[in-house]
Length: 461
Image (cartoon, rainbow, N blue to C red):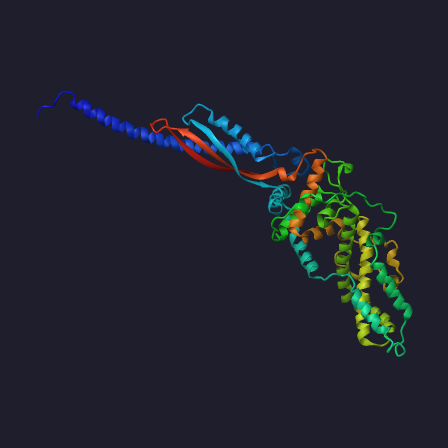
């Protein structure tokens, strides 16, 4: 059979067109996949470039990485400028930016300061890898403290006992030592007075710094309350607070003069959130008295010698009434423990140590000294080993409310950074950023023209 001239050429041409179409389709498919990866790389690099503009003052003072922004529009403009650098290159991926949106931005104040917590934990874990080695002892101590009740004496119960003693029907039958009854009244009124003045005395100068609480992050926060975290996390954050915030006795190594600080007793503010240094110190002292009173009462209840002394003292107070004697004995044991705690806190505020759990040789105040108000004098110098003021603050941080602690940390950070940057606001500080980008791409090996693509990218510290 004879073939017509040119049939083979036509046949090969048709095959070549099909092969080229298949080949160019495969090439275009590979190019589109490469364009997708190139866009993701460009967007990821762009958001990293945006996040690299973290606030330097915040890092220098507190070792925290947060991006300070003016508005979502400013973020979008900055992101688009970095992305445009990649998309304007001459390559096989011709693209144009159509739209850039901030999909989500997590600030320092969101969700009870959870972003701040993550930053703090990351820094502490990196800086102090062996910090948690002694955590077991702290956990045991914290469990013991949480099981104890408030050591403040039960004034109502005491008044009820005294009222029963002075009841007119029994007054002639009972032999009452009224001088000792008046002594109890004096002790009661003394402990109900200004505890801070009782502990510090007139010779100690207390900071007069104060601040307005209206409009600050902690008072403006209306978000969710965080569940209590692990003991390990609380312990690490307490160490961060020790290193970065001042207290009544210590100053951190931050690059900030004390006169620039709004409050001098920053750790005490983190714990109690009052508007002045004096009020925060007063709350701290009262809490330490309650804590030390609980621990001291535990010692007295285990000491048969101390209990016997108290029972003998209350015998004349009760007039032989066993019920009244038992109630008064419990009340006086609480007063005694509380009076010993006054000396303990005085010692702590001088920078000296007080053991958490005392032994007999570490007990300072005898019953007669207590009844003679010796605890109002200067405490004795025994040179005992134990925990210092900062160690007791660490315990208070471990039992503090997680959300309140976080937002108060944010308060102090804002106040102090504003001393070197007046327009600084923690509400403008971002830890996590999610951007959505709409891109228009052009086919190179197909005649379909242009097509749209959307990608999301997340940047965080």
